[in-house]
Length: 90
Image (tube, rainbow, N blue to C red; front, side, top):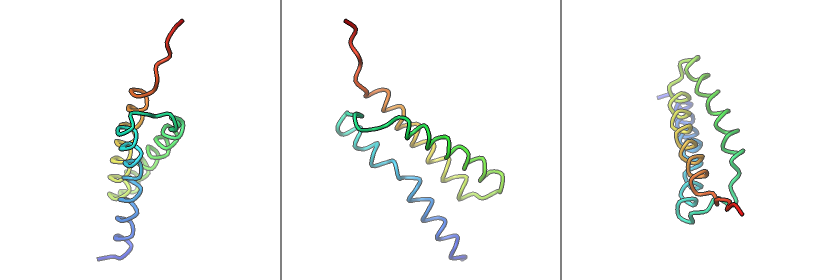
């Protein structure tokens, strides 16, 4: 097996699940006070482009890793809007 395929697979796993600890903390504390939604949106844009690039070059590791990453980011953004404090009208 090509050692670079292993390196790519490990790198994909680390970055794919990089936001899982943040999602876990958001659920556990039921708070998104210290989380910037702009970070998630910016990362989603980058991951979307990486997904297109992976499809273009036919690299299944790049493609699948970024599809899964995009899924975790959608969960994170959804949680952010679900858990954010609601402003009460006066």
